[in-house]
Image (cartoon, rainbow, N blue to C red):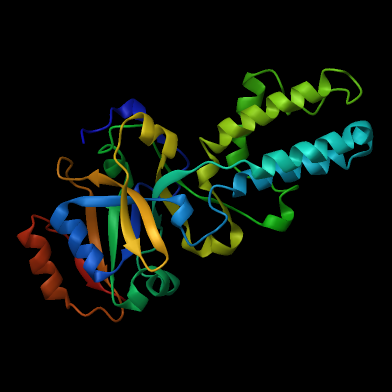
Length: 287
């Protein structure tokens, strides 16, 4: 797979810089290094069942909050109906996730074999250039689900700009009794669908906020249009779709490596393994 042209890498909000920690098992760590290959997993197979849906739920709540306002009583039920349509919108991605911190107990337990694995510091922007298709790189915005109608998230800057560029404002500032009102709302729904395909993948429930997560994401339809082959790996929960990122043609993607608190391999063993395969990086134990 050839390197992606710079124009195909869409960089979103990255407040912690381009380096992110990827937690994984010792076996998977070895495979990543030996094959110079990273996998992007389909959102339908992730443990968080809200993946790809949070943005739709967030925007739907804003529609409902408007519908409850006294100025919109005449259009309240149509707005609630459209809120249901928005809530059902979702966008599927292939993605790989990273954490701001390289030594976090919750991540060791959840993703690195209960502490027996490895945390790899990876340059997300370098990895993104290895993909020959549109790719998005950014940190997640965390939102409290019960407070969707009042939250002010940086993610909405993109959504509001999208609406303004189409002359819709929020598509809800016109007279609800005017014949053009609901068609405007329907136009807004189309724009929301666009938003879900651009920034929606970076919205997550606030219960995950400890992760300070960032992502490399590829829209499923973009991967299909580019002819990227989707693979499947067998798991106890069933087949998991994924796409491969070939890292053999990009350099400098790996930073330091942190050993899990119960890692089977010691520091010297991991250092020798990395040096043998051309990675002269720092290896340190968990604190």
